[in-house]
Amino acid sequence: MEIGIVPTIPLGFAFFLPLLGYFMRSRKVIELYALIASLLTSYASWKLFLMAYSSEEPLVYFLGNWPAPIGITLEVDRLSALIVFTASVLFFLVIVYSIGYMEREKGIHYYYTALLGLESGIIGALMTGDAFNIFVMFEVIGASSYFLVGFIRRDGKAVEAAFKYGVIGALATSLYFLAMGFLYSSFGTLNLADLSAKFHGIPFPVTVKTFGDPTLALAIFFALTISMVVVKSANFPGHFWLPDAHPAAPSPVSALLSGLVVAVPIYVLARYIYTIFPPEGRIGGIISASLLILGASSAFLGSTMMLVQRDIKRLVAYSTIMHTGYMFMGLGVLSFTGLMAVTYHIVNHALAKALLFLAAGSFIHASGTKNFERMAGIGRSMPFTTFAFVVATLALVGVPPLNAFFSKMLIYNALVERSFVLGLVVIITSAVAAWAYFRALVYLWRGKPSEGHHHGHEHSHEGPHGHENPYMALIMVIMAVAIIIVGLLSPMLIDRLAIPAAGQAMDYNGYIEAVKKLAEAAISFH
Image 1 (spheres, rainbow, N blue to C red):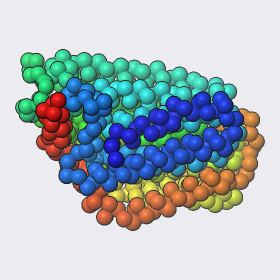
Image 2: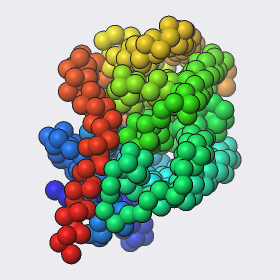
Image 3: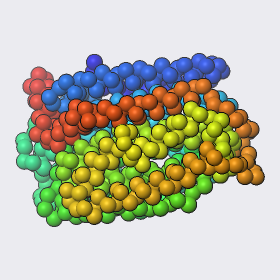
Image 4: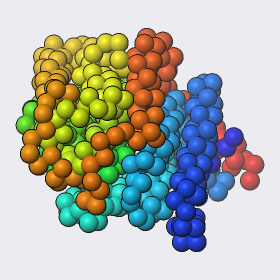
């Protein structure tokens, strides 16, 4: 299988979906079309995953047969393959869930078009071996995300949140575009393997020498790129758009935004820090300190704000800010343990946070309100949703043997290697978050609804249902069971997945040679 086919599957299906929706008014045909697209993408991602983990070097593909560094290159190692597979599976599950959740919405073909476009953008950003193509994929992710956040246009808050998200997102990508200007002016290339080769003094075919001393250009590049990542991943102080955007979006979209979209810029930052330009000396110290301070600030901010929320989706949204803070801190350690911990936490957080948003969406869908005090007691009549919500919250808090416990423990271990005080950040903020979750669970299970129980619901033309949709319940149970199984198998999965992924990601020689060897062969052939 050519690895280049993976991001083109959802993109190709998305391209024809509006036309299909125009001629075919049947919801079932459109939903089946989206399911087939996502299922094929999941299958291709699984094959890619197997190929990456069976290969000793990264997989490389030249788009249009233009060799690096002239053309656009896709380069997939175990780190990117693991996250690509996780993303494709989550998209498939969310699309199945959406069949029930979006059952009363109109223009559904546009919804699934944007979802498939979002999937293509995420996979493309994870697979690309070109700095400019990362920018392009961020634009694809952004355009799809902004549309999905404001999809329910009759909700003024959703439109406002989408506008705010779009403006802030455009500013962030502009910072990254400016960063690439400094990079290109000094290195004369935007191919990631070529950039790394120049940084390490390794010759690369069809390329030029570095222009002057790249130290200043790299310092500016990292400053601008970290600023972009701070905003895109909703870390402090660029977090302010997320508590509005994620709750305003349809809950399946919120699951993908919090589970995957905010993780992509963190992956990009990890790639630059650990594979392309491993920072040393003064620059390394500044980057490390910046990430640790920003991450700790986000963790405290997110956990504290969880305590004062009544909107169940805003509660979960602030939890995302807390967890992206953990990931920043893990990267900031600048060690193998830190990268391995963040890699595993990206996967575990994506699964647990997506499930938590889907469970919250199921409660909203059934009760007609986002305020968990007004939906008090509904948990007893929705056992599958309550089970999923409990499993997801316990996992994110860090209760063993659920999946996120192990990745949070790895992050804790990485931080303690630097300072015990840093490890306390994870413990204290997790305890605060646990209290906020527990408070919501008590309302959902034991509380009595307050007056106004059915006001302020997410879908204004729907009344409260009071029952669980079978599609939604099935997906949530599957994901809850997966969280338990992944947790139980975590010792093995860490050894077989997380450690090899981090090890290959830190092997810059292997990353360079995989592209260099193929480029030399292509050039000699021509």
